Length: 152
Image (cartoon, rainbow, N blue to C red):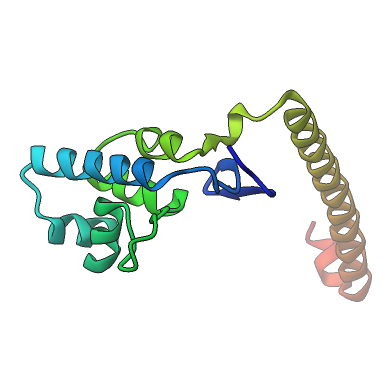
């Protein structure tokens, strides 16, 4: 795959999929059409259920733009279409060069784990500060309102 940089869309990572050919986008579009027809679903109904315009669905199913260039759908759209068709989004995404982010390199996973650990530690620190603040506010209220203190 020819690539200039990594992009992440809807939980999928890919090098910018510039190596994907028009034949590949046409093949994915034909697969979508085949599944849709097998379900007895019109293109219009699929468009509505996936939340995309009918013109966009035509581009997805033909795999080309109105200028005849390849039409590469993004993972977000592929997920919507897959959900409407009741199929696994990977059937649409992997042929287009997208890889689930969970299949990224070990180094990427290590970095993600470190970020999560940092976030959890930060959340724990925030909870400790919040608890201290609540205790301090409770003490201040009790000092200002002796009646409240006697009822406790």
